[in-house]
Length: 431
Ligand code: ATP
Ligand code: MG
Image (cartoon, rainbow, N blue to C red; front, top):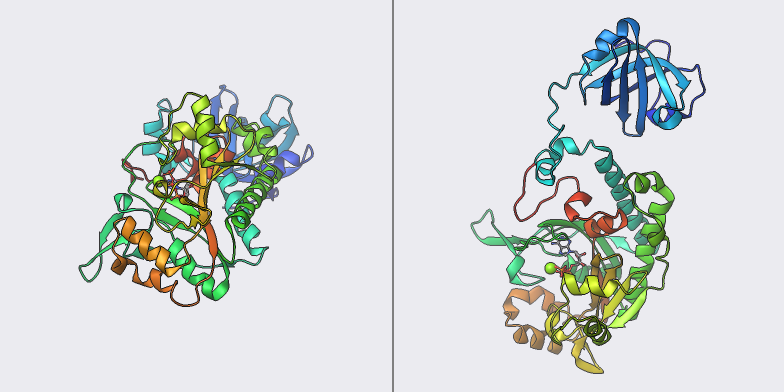
């Protein structure tokens, strides 16, 4: 179509332009008001919204533009204190590019319905804001690791043995008829790669057949994992807190507008400068007991306990040295106290709870074989992993960060499905 005279600009640019400038903007009809003589459109593109006033002959054409129709508008920028952003475009022409008869998102805004039409709801200003924050988060994760000498690596998604316990494995039939699984974590492959690259990380999906419905579990989630040769538990906790702060700092720098649109108070995030708090599992249990929770020594902390615990802190808190039986088999025991592991979970404040699990991995062949037996696992299922302890084993540590949970917390969302464009959960694989 002819883009006469006016300069083609994004909405955000038009909002910054002086009165009288001729522009062409392309976008979607966000809101629509027909006042007879004049039609008021609010036009949306990836950068923002702007009011468009259409009169005269063009009003007829604008009237044909339903909510979410795509349009090209030509006109003149004018100040109007009543318009969102203080500017509007007085249109000289409106062209409907793609009509949108009966856009389904109108009255029913229930969570279930919005999940059914997620392919359309991703256009909403809320989702747009979350997706922009998510973009910053992913970029900042890469930036952190790449700036500190970690190599980015990729692990396979088809695997043959559990990392995090059999209960949440996704079996799938492989080409040769055998059963393989979708990976629950790339950790073991990252461990293999530290013998080559020493400091490695990956950003990849992990799959877990989570059987219970919670606000913080997806069946397919994005996992940022790192593994480092020679690193101790203390070393890796320092990496984790620096990483989390780096991500938050970038979001505070780039996404103030989005945080505001989501109603997210940035102050609790601004407070999250390292060092974070550190609490042993035993200390956590004492604190919980004082708050009326009875946790049996040896059990993992559940979401309710984590929530109660983080209430006491104004920034993230590490709970370290979990009991052996509360954690997966690969965690190294504390030589000073073998019934606890050199592990740590990082819990986010404001009720969010666990966002990272990590710690020191077993590096001795004997300890690993013993642990596999104690956990009722078959060493033959873990042959290649055991090999890593046979050939030049080194002390090493690592962690896994749930990126969707991190986004959920940073954006202040109350459900993890709202932190991702197309969530996969116990009951949903569509759209
Ligand atoms: P939880 O106890 O909450 O199920 P986990 O102990 O199983 O977590 P890890 O195995 O330590 O979690 O995984 C590392 C991180 O991956 C977690 O801290 C969390 O942020 C994220 N994560 C784990 N499972 C899920 C899931 N089903 N959906 C989204 N994120 C997850
Ligand atoms: Mg779990």
